[in-house]
Image 1 (tube, rainbow, N blue to C red):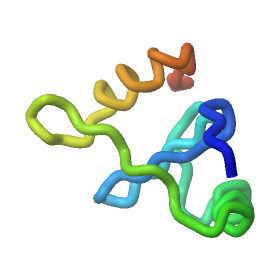
Image 2: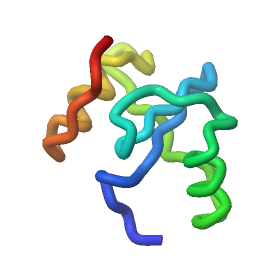
Image 3: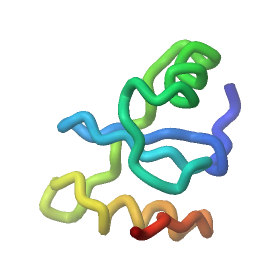
Image 4: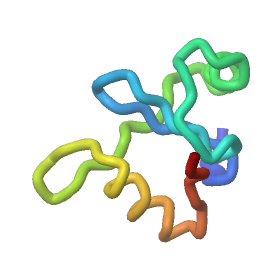
Length: 74
């Protein structure tokens, strides 16, 4: 599958999954995520890390900002 930032997922070591379609964190059993994994045959990309090596929301925002993708806030 060709990378499409508008329809992709990133997973953190602690199990957090961010979906760019939903623009928010979803569960690993989210039906859209499960279908997406089944379609491409692999898990999400690794969640980006900050300069200290931590998988933070800020690191995710920095990476997604390069593609003009924003996160929904509560």
